[in-house]
Amino acid sequence: MAVRNTFIFLLSALLFTQTSNASDKDEFIGTWLLVHSQVLDESGNWKVPENSVGMIGSISYSANGYMSFQSERLGRSEILDRRIDDMPIEGLRALLSSYSAYYGTYEIDEENKTVTHNIIGSSFLTAAGTSTVRTYSFSGSQLTLLNGENRRFVWKRP
Image (tube, rainbow, N blue to C red; front, top):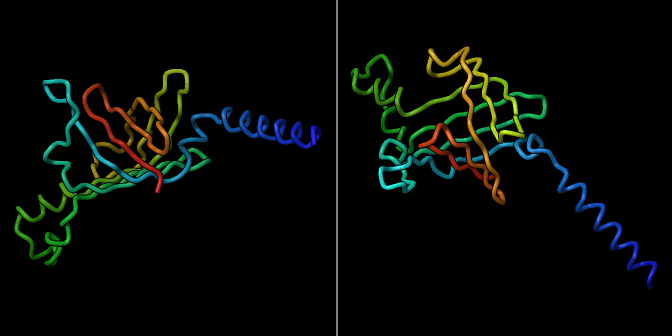
């Protein structure tokens, strides 16, 4: 019985050690779904801004260093109920502002807790060829990316 208990203890210790030694890069790998995007208001409270209400999205990180992001506003199908060629300029503006995406490579700086997205292509033409640095943190099954000091994106595993 003592041998069995010792074996279970050693196996548990080994599994815990391997789990706790996982790098942050390992934690990033996979797909995350948007919980919400928030801004810090003048009072120091996080709130969902009006232009982010009804947003859904995903961000994915691969083991080989590539990433992709996309988001859209719910209700987008109302905008797309006609052909683009027949859309008035207001409809085209609404269409363009209701969807965003980019892809590229990423780098993790575990010491500074930052992730850098090196953007190769984007729905915003001026973003291609640029990089964006975000501070990150993990809490349970959630990933939080802080863009600057006043905007954060909270993601969860599906």
